[in-house]
Amino acid sequence: MRPAKPSSFDRKPETWEILLTGGDADRAQQAIEEIARALAKPPVAWIPEFDAEPFRIARGVSLGSGAPSLALFYAYYDKSLPAGGAWVGQVTRYLDYTAAGLEVAVLDSGFMYGICGVLWALH
Image (cartoon, rainbow, N blue to C red; front, side, top):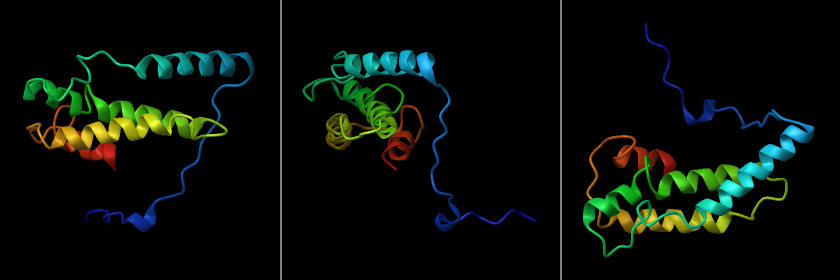
């Protein structure tokens, strides 16, 4: 016998568990904030302009090295903040880049550098 295929109704609500407190939490929060600020302007090798060669644009659209991974980072980071909403613009920016890049990029079916990873990140 096989286990029953889980349905979308079987999902448990998301829960967040606080892992760090006090000074450790403050230092971690500061480090993540610095990473978020640094990633706001990634190198052009990561997120190329759309006049670049198609293989470069495909890299910028992939989960392994491009905009979907940055959108995912900012989405979770923003969700972890008490107020939230501070980084939603970055999420939107990278999702827009991904959508536009999919129009010109040719991706295989792979996860990290293919369409499967992009779709997983978008989901």
